Length: 199
Ligand SMILES: O=C(O)CCC(=O)C(=O)O
Ligand SMILES: [Mn+2]
Image (cartoon, rainbow, N blue to C red; front, side, top):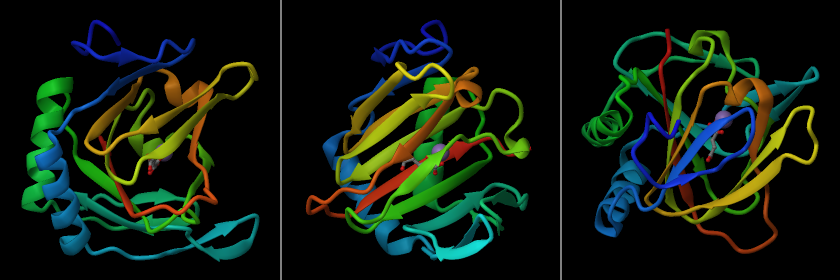
């Protein structure tokens, strides 16, 4: 990881390759993209199936891509919309930093502290064996929790700042789960973009 990416915080968690860049976007860029994406993305709330029960997903989502390959998780199949101008601009900045061509972006809108994203790994088979995930955060700072699947002492939580970029690569998804937990504190909206390579 440290060879791949030029600088910033390496999380130094065993069995993972995770780097946090903050800031990645300037405050002006981050404010601009938050406004544009809030307004222009086709946000939707899907039903998910967990242990046979159906729930409304606790956040809004959208899928954009440069192809029409679907993405399936939690019993949902999402079909992508063509990348918008803003997403293409952000994608290009990330590609310069990571030397990777991303095909798709899964977006999340957390409306308040009750919205969340439960423990999971980004390990769907269409992402391939050791997926690289590039995650941009805009708006309300929220904690991103990581925990090792078997070594219980390996856990970390990091506050994802407005305009930051978190990259997960290597074997991270095999060994770690991540989540955005609910919070009882008053929280404004947060937009998260996860750029992925969908095969
Ligand atoms: O909102 C975040 O920072 C994480 C999103 C996430 O893990 C996902 O969409 O798979
Ligand atoms: Mn994830």
